[in-house]
Image 1 (spheres, rainbow, N blue to C red):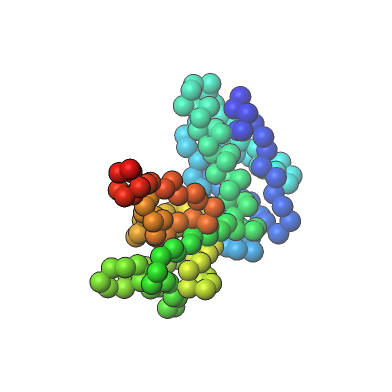
Image 2 (image 1 turned 90 degrees about the vertical axis):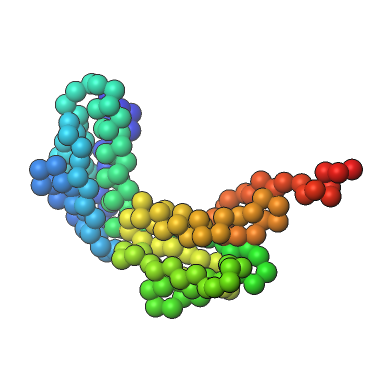
Length: 180
């Protein structure tokens, strides 16, 4: 069996999980998330845990078994505590501000960039240069953070742009330093 797939997903206090056919639904303090299981993977509830099993031992079935277990575990954690990604804006004159459900960014372009936030995600801005994205859906939080970063990727020469807080930018030596 898949090492990840055979581990049961514990259900914490305050979270309810329901299984209807091949759809797993988790409800908690931060909302409701649903996940459709791929064919060949089934879920069952045993007390305070969700067990996932697969019908065959094919390579793809084993991979989908572990994937499904990880997705269900992320759902359960998401509706209980949520997920967050922190982005940092580096550069003179680069800043962000929140206007309702839209982030307005000044990123060195000739115009301000408006980034609308999708439903299920909230943003918080500190010191105009630190953006925190929060939400229950791990994939959505990560995608929104990646889309924000893509607006102005960090430049390898000066490090200017939008980067994850824990990201290390590989710097390049400029022309003057390399000419000697």
